[in-house]
Image 1 (cartoon, rainbow, N blue to C red):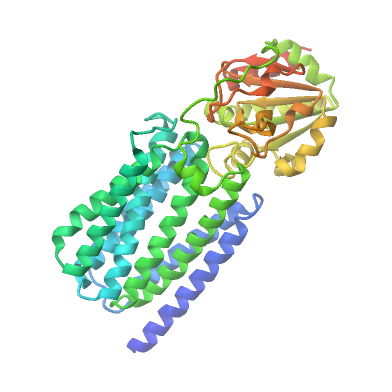
Image 2 (cartoon, rainbow, N blue to C red):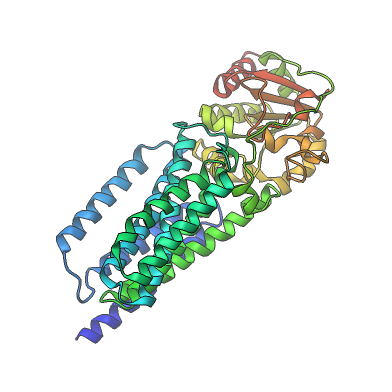
Length: 462
């Protein structure tokens, strides 16, 4: 009977994994992403339910309580958190996954320290999980605005960070070697500290890559913990953790490299260069920033054949996507073709801008990525840039610029460029934007939602 139960549980776990894979596949397209999330939720539900039938499982009441608290908490926050704050929630929940992996590693070390193979895997999982939860919490604080989003550079940071990591890992090795639990506390404290120190020098512009990498690390930590559990009484659950963790780790790693490539930078440069901590100096812009009134912009757009809207971080912060949808509908009612140019890192996380616009009711077939839209700018009458900076900065074409080589939206090629911006400050990278000084560029200053609202009012009045 026990063998039959074990085989059945293994078969159900395989089904859950297949549903996970289907979910990941569906998430590859904005059109089917919602379905992918549902598939992933069903797979997780299957995995959780079947685990209750694992031979040797006890403390059902505590497990059920944990599932209830986590399930109700996740449901509540998913309901109340606005889409503009979704990156913070992703960072927070991703950190919880890393924390859970670190906690599992700690429990395994306390119970199986005599088994060197299992303990080594638990230490590895605890290292990665601890770094992931600490780093994710810093990412959350920066995204939420509870600490400066700019890179925070501490003195001798590379030496200090390396020292903290080396000593922390050494404590883990001593824990394995001596089987003395006195090394456990400094082991976890130092690895958590390293996660904090690693993330502090990373600016807000690089948060998409940070979130993706910590997501990958959480998956790897879960997989390592799964390997450790395989030799225990809950070996079936361990196999499921290995497969699910590997899927998350692989997809998160791929996304990390794709996001770094979108900025023409390496992952190591993102994490260790303190990009944006110092602003570019010694560069003199030719020309001046030219302000423009909303009524003039409205007239310009009304008589255009095509308008391309390039949204950025400022639009998300101002929660202006609803007004942008209203502007788009109004222009189309006047016979103007409207498209949206989406840079991969224009939002705070991969796909964030697409989801924000879709939530406002803008059709996915109007959203075009950089490679699809760049060729159209030269034949476009008006480009409206809303709260974007570095991703539309022609300095990326200038040798010696910190942005040199970064793929951007070539909006400067349009006949007219209107930039909605709060003030004259530089972007996250600390680089002066060449675009703002071009002859064909004008600045519509103000909060994105208020500025787009003025455009809508002016178009209705004409």
